Image (cartoon, rainbow over all chains, first blue to last red; front, side):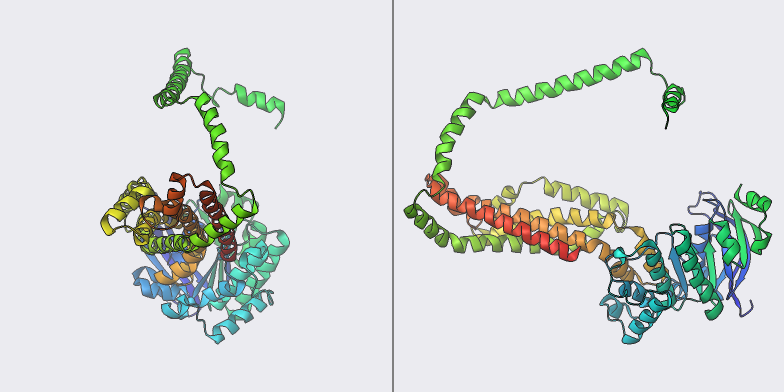
Length: 249
Length: 283
C-alpha cells in the first residue's frame, strides 16, 4: 500500500444477515488522497453499504478493506472509533442535531478527540472552538455560530455538516447522496468546497452520486456499482451513454 | 389525473379483485351483528343503573341551587370566602408540594428504567416487552387505589399521598420516556457514531438532544395530572386540601367548597401556563 493510498478494498463482500442476500459482491479498488471519486449506481446497488464499510459503521462479511492503512474489520471498537474520527461523513438528510447551535454541531466533530467526561459536559477547549469557527468561515457560514441548526436552509445545513467533517480533521470525506436534496446552485457551492478540500488539504473525497452531470464536472474518477458488483472504474469522460445504461440497468 | 384514467383504474381487474356474493353477504352480516351487539351493550348499561333523563333533569334543577351557593352574593360572603381562602392556604401549599414530590420521586426511577422498556435501547427485545407489560399492569390501577394502599401502609397524611402519586407517575413516565426513546431519529445518532463518538457520547449528543424536550414535556404533563389528583387524595386521607373539600361538601358548606374549586381552577391554569412556557424554553 502506497503512502498516498487512503482506501484499499480487496474482494469485499457484505450481507446484512446470515441468510440475507449479498449486498456487496467482491468489490476491489484503490483510492488515493486528493482524489474526488464519484460512486454511481441504482438504488440498492450497495453504494451506502460500501460507504458505511469504509468508515467502520458496518463490517464487511469477507475481503480486506484498509481505511487509512488500517483494517477496520480487525480492530476493536475503541480503535475503530479512532479511525472513524479520521473519516468524515456527510449525509443526504444532513443528520445535524436540530436543537443545538451551529457551533455545537461543528464541535461534535471534535468529540472523538476529547474524553467522554469532558465532551458530555460540553467542555470543549477554546482551541476546538476556534477551529470550529474557522471551519464555519471556510464553508461561508461565519456569523452563524449561535443560530440553531433547525433554522438553517438545506444548503446551509449541508455546509455545517462539511464544517463538522473539516473540524474532525478528516483525511477522507464520504458523502452519501450529499447533494441529492439541494438545488443546482447550492450543489455547485457544496461541490466547490469539496474540490477545495481535495486540492488544498489532500483529502480523499468519496461521494455516492445520482446526478451524472455532477460526477462529470467535479469528479476525477467514477466507480460504478451494479447489484453489489463493481462494473466501472475510470475517468468520468469515459462515461458514455451506453456505459451509463449498462451501469444503471 | 384525468377522469378517463380514473375509469381505467377502476375497471382494472388487477386493482381490486371482484368479491363473490357470499363474501359480500358475510361482510355486511358481520357489520350488522357487531352494530347490534354494541347497541345492546349500551342499552344494558343504561338499564343496569336505571338511568333516567327525568331524574337527571330534576337533579340539574336542584343542582343549580347548590351551584349558586358556591359563589359569594354580597360583601359579607365575599369576606367570608376570603377568610376560607386564607384558612386553606397552608393546605393548598401542601397539595402543591405533594404533586411536586410525587412527580419528582416518580420520574427519578423512570429515567433509567425507560431504557429497558424501549425497544430501541433495551438489552434484548423480550425484556422490553416484559417491562412494558408490567407498566401496563401498573397503569391499570387508579391513583385512589394507590392512595388507599399507601394510607394503609404508612398511615394518614401527605407522605402517603406523595408516594401514591409517585407510583402513578413512575409507571406513566417510564412508558412516555420509552416512547420518546423509540421515536429518536437514527440519523443524528449515526452521525455521532460516524465521527468516532463513544457510546456515552452517542447518547449525549445523538439521542439526548432529541429526547430531552419530550422528557421535559412528559414530566410537566405528569405534574399537571398530579396537581389535579392531589386535590382528591385528601378524600382518602392522603393529605392536601381534598380532606377539607370533602368535609365542606358533606356539610353542604357550598361557599367554602366553591372557594376550593375556584382555587383548583386557578392552580391548574397557572401550572398549565408555566408548563407551556417551560416547554417552549426547552423546545
